[in-house]
Image 1 (cartoon, rainbow, N blue to C red):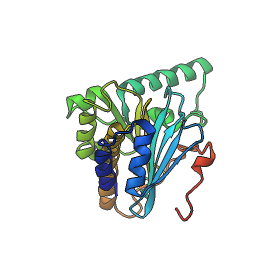
Image 2 (image 1 turned 45 degrees about the horizontal axis):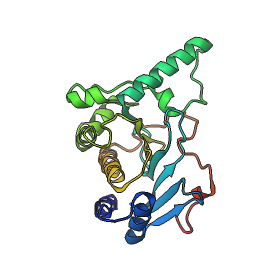
Image 3 (image 1 turned 30 degrees about the horizontal axis):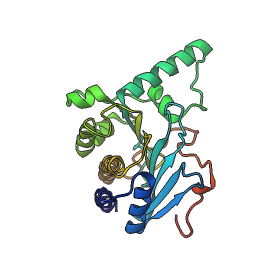
Image 4 (image 1 turned 120 degrees about the vertical axis):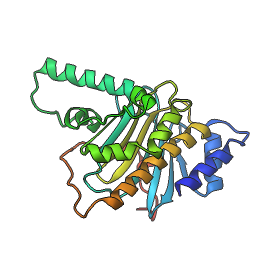
Length: 250
């Protein structure tokens, strides 16, 4: 389904309409469920994928490190506990590391505050992946995970290639970007002021590479390949009625 979505995004660039109208027209042609709030400040698109529902949402941010509007993509893949992985733009990683250090230093805390999002807590909990095999990846991104072998296998391939490619377009300005596998799901977050078919298509290409790599690795893991670590805060909030599940969706 992801490859089909990407093809539809490519076709949508031919539409004469701009902005959310172009996105709504594409969704209608693709037979996807599209909803926009009354003020036109937020939309949700849902599409079936691998027996689950891929959810793409654009609107006000759910993370303080994103200024302005945010694009989010989520897909439940039933990943095992060992697949706890995080990739983000390097400026964002350095910023969050600095904020975390300052907060714990000033407050003299000795334990991780569970009210902080996983992105911040994982920076203190999990080891980083050595990206020296690719100079562009090393300069532009940071990657970490509970298992460094899986983390390296996840990033060293099509996903890494897509991230390098994104430095020429989608992430040329190094806007805050997060790609995360946790609690069985894959998430993407991107600071995106103006949604349009082209950047959304590029996001789907990165997301697809991350999903395919994670599924391939999952197939190679032995049964009981890992347990979840206790990370209590939610990575996906539901702030409005737009987040209510579609009738008959899972």
